[in-house]
Image 1: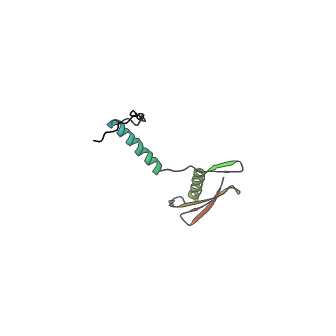
Image 2: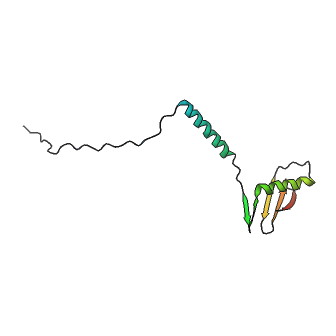
Image 3: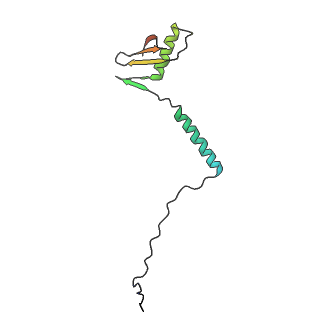
Length: 111
């Protein structure tokens, strides 16, 4: 008969791992509010219009201001023409913005 050998070392207990606190379950109302907030953020991100500012030799000019000025200058001579395309070329060393509207109308505005 073979004898079973007993393990002379006592059983070593493994240390208990502490669980990291996770997110608490959200209620239906909280889920709805979070989804609505996320949808609003996505809409803002999809319709993002960056604000562009040109700084040159101590002067600042906003691109939005230049666009509005170019449109106003164009409408002085072409009152009823709709603007469907606008290209704006800024030359800060001359303090001028040149524009092409609808592919055929050119002009310039100082700033």
